Length: 119
Length: 107
Image 1 (cartoon, rainbow over the protein chains, first blue to last red):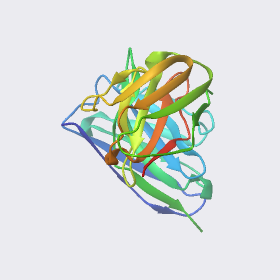
Image 2 (image 1 turned 90 degrees about the vertical axis):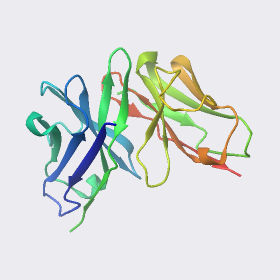
Image 3 (image 1 turned 135 degrees about the vertical axis):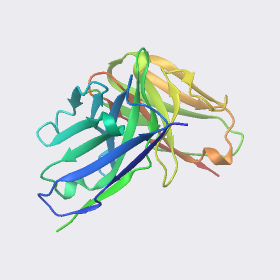
Protein backbone atom coordinates (compact mmCIF):
# COMPACT_ATOMS: atom_id res chain seq x y z
CA UNK A 1 0.00 0.00 0.00
CA UNK A 2 1.01 3.64 -0.30
CA UNK A 3 3.43 4.79 2.38
CA UNK A 4 5.04 8.09 3.30
CA UNK A 5 8.61 8.05 4.53
CA UNK A 6 10.07 11.25 5.91
CA UNK A 7 13.48 12.40 7.04
CA UNK A 8 15.51 15.48 7.88
CA UNK A 9 17.79 17.14 10.40
CA UNK A 10 16.48 16.86 13.95
CA UNK A 11 18.62 19.27 15.99
CA UNK A 12 18.92 22.91 15.01
CA UNK A 13 20.16 26.15 16.51
CA UNK A 14 18.03 29.29 16.56
CA UNK A 15 18.02 31.16 13.21
CA UNK A 16 18.85 28.00 11.23
CA UNK A 17 16.64 26.46 8.53
CA UNK A 18 14.64 23.30 9.11
CA UNK A 19 14.61 21.04 6.05
CA UNK A 20 12.47 17.92 5.80
CA UNK A 21 11.62 15.60 2.91
CA UNK A 22 8.77 13.15 2.45
CA UNK A 23 8.84 10.35 -0.14
CA UNK A 24 5.80 8.57 -1.52
CA UNK A 25 6.23 4.81 -1.93
CA UNK A 26 3.89 2.63 -4.00
CA UNK A 27 1.95 5.69 -5.08
CA UNK A 28 1.98 8.88 -7.09
CA UNK A 29 1.97 12.62 -6.44
CA UNK A 30 -0.75 13.03 -9.06
CA UNK A 31 -4.29 13.90 -8.07
CA UNK A 32 -3.56 14.79 -4.47
CA UNK A 33 -2.50 17.62 -2.25
CA UNK A 34 0.44 17.07 0.08
CA UNK A 35 0.77 18.71 3.48
CA UNK A 36 3.08 19.34 6.39
CA UNK A 37 1.58 19.34 9.87
CA UNK A 38 3.42 19.85 13.14
CA UNK A 39 2.58 18.96 16.72
CA UNK A 40 3.84 20.48 19.93
CA UNK A 41 2.62 20.46 23.53
CA UNK A 42 1.96 24.19 23.39
CA UNK A 43 0.18 24.50 20.04
CA UNK A 44 -1.22 21.01 19.47
CA UNK A 45 -1.62 19.98 15.83
CA UNK A 46 -0.92 22.82 13.41
CA UNK A 47 -1.30 22.66 9.63
CA UNK A 48 1.67 24.41 8.03
CA UNK A 49 0.78 24.32 4.36
CA UNK A 50 0.24 22.16 1.33
CA UNK A 51 1.22 21.72 -2.30
CA UNK A 52 -0.81 20.19 -5.08
CA UNK A 53 0.44 17.94 -7.87
CA UNK A 54 1.01 21.02 -10.06
CA UNK A 55 3.21 22.69 -7.47
CA UNK A 56 0.67 25.29 -6.33
CA UNK A 57 1.15 26.01 -2.64
CA UNK A 58 -0.96 27.34 0.24
CA UNK A 59 0.55 28.28 3.59
CA UNK A 60 -0.66 28.97 7.11
CA UNK A 61 -0.94 32.76 7.43
CA UNK A 62 1.30 32.83 10.51
CA UNK A 63 4.11 30.99 8.73
CA UNK A 64 3.89 32.43 5.23
CA UNK A 65 7.05 34.52 5.57
CA UNK A 66 9.18 31.55 6.68
CA UNK A 67 7.84 28.40 5.03
CA UNK A 68 8.36 26.86 1.60
CA UNK A 69 6.84 23.58 0.42
CA UNK A 70 8.02 22.16 -2.88
CA UNK A 71 7.64 19.10 -5.10
CA UNK A 72 10.17 16.88 -6.81
CA UNK A 73 7.98 14.91 -9.19
CA UNK A 74 10.92 12.95 -10.60
CA UNK A 75 11.56 11.46 -7.18
CA UNK A 76 7.93 11.38 -5.92
CA UNK A 77 8.96 13.57 -3.01
CA UNK A 78 7.89 16.82 -1.43
CA UNK A 79 9.83 18.97 0.98
CA UNK A 80 9.48 21.53 3.74
CA UNK A 81 11.80 24.40 4.53
CA UNK A 82 11.22 26.59 7.56
CA UNK A 83 13.65 29.46 7.94
CA UNK A 84 14.78 31.41 11.02
CA UNK A 85 13.67 28.75 13.49
CA UNK A 86 13.23 29.51 17.18
CA UNK A 87 12.62 27.38 20.25
CA UNK A 88 8.89 27.75 19.51
CA UNK A 89 9.38 25.66 16.34
CA UNK A 90 10.40 22.61 18.37
CA UNK A 91 8.00 19.76 17.75
CA UNK A 92 7.06 16.67 15.81
CA UNK A 93 6.66 17.30 12.08
CA UNK A 94 4.42 15.08 9.94
CA UNK A 95 3.97 14.85 6.21
CA UNK A 96 0.48 13.85 5.10
CA UNK A 97 -1.58 13.19 2.00
CA UNK A 98 -4.76 15.19 1.48
CA UNK A 99 -7.86 13.56 0.08
CA UNK A 100 -9.27 16.43 -1.94
CA UNK A 101 -12.86 16.72 -3.10
CA UNK A 102 -15.69 16.40 -2.42
CA UNK A 103 -14.46 15.41 1.05
CA UNK A 104 -11.26 16.96 2.33
CA UNK A 105 -9.16 15.24 4.99
CA UNK A 106 -5.70 13.85 5.77
CA UNK A 107 -5.91 10.18 4.84
CA UNK A 108 -2.28 9.10 5.04
CA UNK A 109 0.45 10.25 7.42
CA UNK A 110 4.18 9.83 7.74
CA UNK A 111 5.59 8.60 11.03
CA UNK A 112 6.82 12.02 12.09
CA UNK A 113 10.22 13.65 12.54
CA UNK A 114 11.21 15.33 15.78
CA UNK A 115 12.80 18.73 15.33
CA UNK A 116 14.47 20.30 18.35
CA UNK A 117 15.65 23.91 18.32
CA UNK A 118 18.17 24.68 21.04
CA UNK A 119 21.17 26.94 21.46
CA UNK B 1 -9.34 30.89 11.18
CA UNK B 2 -11.95 28.44 12.47
CA UNK B 3 -11.26 27.43 16.07
CA UNK B 4 -12.36 23.95 17.10
CA UNK B 5 -13.03 23.39 20.81
CA UNK B 6 -13.28 19.83 22.03
CA UNK B 7 -14.88 18.61 25.24
CA UNK B 8 -14.36 17.05 27.63
CA UNK B 9 -10.59 17.23 27.99
CA UNK B 10 -10.43 13.72 29.41
CA UNK B 11 -12.97 10.92 29.48
CA UNK B 12 -12.44 7.98 31.82
CA UNK B 13 -14.78 5.04 31.16
CA UNK B 14 -14.95 1.28 31.54
CA UNK B 15 -14.84 -1.28 28.72
CA UNK B 16 -18.25 -1.70 27.10
CA UNK B 17 -19.39 1.82 28.01
CA UNK B 18 -20.37 4.48 25.50
CA UNK B 19 -18.14 7.51 24.87
CA UNK B 20 -19.42 10.73 23.36
CA UNK B 21 -16.85 13.36 22.33
CA UNK B 22 -17.85 16.88 21.32
CA UNK B 23 -16.30 19.30 18.82
CA UNK B 24 -17.65 22.85 18.57
CA UNK B 25 -16.55 25.23 15.80
CA UNK B 26 -16.23 29.00 16.09
CA UNK B 27 -18.06 29.32 12.76
CA UNK B 28 -20.09 27.02 10.55
CA UNK B 29 -18.12 24.17 8.95
CA UNK B 30 -19.04 22.37 5.74
CA UNK B 31 -19.69 18.77 6.85
CA UNK B 32 -17.63 17.53 3.89
CA UNK B 33 -14.60 19.11 5.55
CA UNK B 34 -14.95 17.66 9.09
CA UNK B 35 -12.84 14.72 10.16
CA UNK B 36 -11.95 12.82 13.32
CA UNK B 37 -8.57 11.24 14.08
CA UNK B 38 -7.24 8.86 16.71
CA UNK B 39 -3.69 9.20 18.03
CA UNK B 40 -1.95 6.68 20.26
CA UNK B 41 1.37 7.39 22.01
CA UNK B 42 4.32 7.39 19.63
CA UNK B 43 2.10 7.18 16.56
CA UNK B 44 0.84 9.55 13.90
CA UNK B 45 -2.84 10.45 13.90
CA UNK B 46 -5.07 7.94 12.13
CA UNK B 47 -8.19 8.91 10.22
CA UNK B 48 -11.41 7.53 11.75
CA UNK B 49 -14.23 9.61 10.26
CA UNK B 50 -14.44 11.91 7.24
CA UNK B 51 -17.30 14.02 5.96
CA UNK B 52 -18.53 14.25 9.58
CA UNK B 53 -20.14 10.79 9.49
CA UNK B 54 -18.37 8.43 7.05
CA UNK B 55 -16.09 5.80 8.53
CA UNK B 56 -12.65 5.47 6.98
CA UNK B 57 -11.53 2.15 5.57
CA UNK B 58 -10.95 -0.51 8.22
CA UNK B 59 -12.52 1.46 11.07
CA UNK B 60 -14.82 -0.65 13.30
CA UNK B 61 -18.52 0.20 13.25
CA UNK B 62 -18.48 1.06 16.96
CA UNK B 63 -17.07 4.43 15.84
CA UNK B 64 -19.61 6.88 14.45
CA UNK B 65 -19.71 10.59 13.74
CA UNK B 66 -22.56 13.05 13.51
CA UNK B 67 -23.35 16.73 13.50
CA UNK B 68 -23.51 19.76 11.26
CA UNK B 69 -22.89 23.49 11.27
CA UNK B 70 -20.90 24.25 14.41
CA UNK B 71 -21.59 21.14 16.51
CA UNK B 72 -20.12 17.73 15.76
CA UNK B 73 -19.63 14.60 17.81
CA UNK B 74 -17.78 11.29 17.76
CA UNK B 75 -19.37 8.31 19.51
CA UNK B 76 -17.64 5.09 20.46
CA UNK B 77 -20.57 2.78 21.19
CA UNK B 78 -18.84 0.03 23.17
CA UNK B 79 -15.38 0.92 24.42
CA UNK B 80 -12.60 -1.59 24.08
CA UNK B 81 -9.19 -1.39 25.77
CA UNK B 82 -7.47 -0.53 22.47
CA UNK B 83 -9.62 2.61 22.15
CA UNK B 84 -7.45 4.31 24.77
CA UNK B 85 -6.06 7.30 22.81
CA UNK B 86 -6.38 11.00 22.12
CA UNK B 87 -9.07 11.96 19.60
CA UNK B 88 -8.93 15.10 17.46
CA UNK B 89 -11.49 16.78 15.27
CA UNK B 90 -10.26 18.71 12.22
CA UNK B 91 -11.78 20.99 9.60
CA UNK B 92 -10.44 21.76 6.13
CA UNK B 93 -12.21 25.03 5.23
CA UNK B 94 -9.79 27.88 4.51
CA UNK B 95 -6.78 27.16 6.71
CA UNK B 96 -7.21 23.66 8.13
CA UNK B 97 -7.38 23.54 11.92
CA UNK B 98 -7.49 20.87 14.60
CA UNK B 99 -9.18 20.71 17.98
CA UNK B 100 -7.00 20.40 21.06
CA UNK B 101 -8.00 16.77 21.59
CA UNK B 102 -9.98 14.60 24.02
CA UNK B 103 -8.09 11.91 25.89
CA UNK B 104 -10.06 8.70 26.36
CA UNK B 105 -8.89 6.53 29.23
CA UNK B 106 -10.14 3.00 29.75
CA UNK B 107 -10.51 2.07 33.43
